[in-house]
Amino acid sequence: MKQQSESISASNPNRIQVVFKRDPPKKTNEPLSASINSIVHSELSILFNELEGLVGLTEAKKTIYEIYALHQINKEREKHGLHLEKQVFHMVFKGNPGTGKTTVARLFGKIFREMGILTKGHLIEVERADLVGEFIGHTAQKTRELVKKAMGGILFIDEAYSLARGGEKDFGKEAVDCLTKSLEDLNNDFICIIAGYNEEMENFLELNPGLPSRFPIHIDFSDYNVDELLQIAHIMTKNKDFELTVEASDKIRRSLMTIVNNPFQMNFSNARHIRNCIEKAIRVQAVRLLRSNELSREDLIHLKAEDFAL
Ligand SMILES: Nc1ncnc2c1ncn2[C@@H]1O[C@H](COP(=O)(O)OP(=O)(O)O)[C@@H](O)[C@H]1O
Ligand SMILES: [Mg+2]
Image 1 (cartoon, helix red, strand yellow):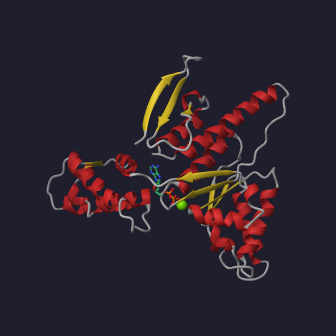
Image 2: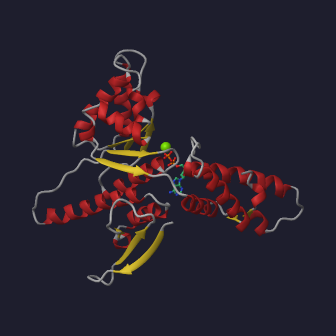
Image 3: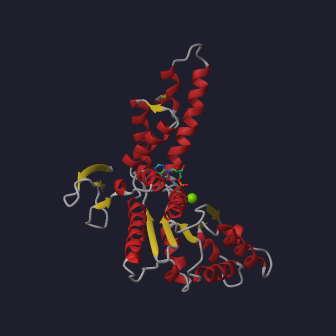
């Protein structure tokens, strides 16, 4: 489970460092320092706090903070007339469904806008059917139009590998070629994020030699563990002005343990599963409450174990 601890930086006692620790430890030995409290730009600090409020997602948080740091340091370098490090921010998001890829992409768009890297920061989410056309030339036209729509923001291509599924004669290849061309222009005011299952994304990049160098940033979205899923459940209910009773929380935990420990479990949708369970429980609670004559605030807030059909 993620714990958050605050420590005062030795070099600058006014600067509070928020250090994130998770167990089991991730690949890196370095503590993840996200000094978000030192961000002065208020809208940006709100967005960074929103990102921090999401459970887990260590790699995504670390990467966006690195980009923020680079951006700030570039401003300092500019003052001294030094060469400015210009980087490409097209990204690959790898992970199972419901691990937060779309949510993070949407937030990244807004953060990039506040940093001045993107002018609008909106997210255009597309999949194969949006890009691939039905006749020669149609695909390039559709793809170009979507890139145009995404200008100033993020073009998010879900299950990008489905573009390579149909083989040589498939129009998906035309979409990949057209996209590759759009990515070449360094000065383009847009960022492309391709997303999908880990292995499929790796294969897709391997099979399209033009792509890997254009997507220098890879972010892994790992499956949430039971503690994290439960934490997400509590956050989601709280955000909706509901509360899980202890019994309800225990029931969800037991159900999650069974799912997570089942080696044959397929298609588990992580946080989306939690969202669906809670939305269903809210409907069941409503039916339960309608049977009572008088309802207290507590009645309206509490989601009980019996509301969860797990
Ligand atoms: N770390 C998290 N904390 C809280 N809610 C989350 C988190 N990750 C995902 N969610 C929620 O789960 C749902 C699915 O997330 P989404 O970003 O659509 O996943 P993906 O794009 O990887 O399939 C959304 O409702 C989102 O708000
Ligand atoms: Mg998604």
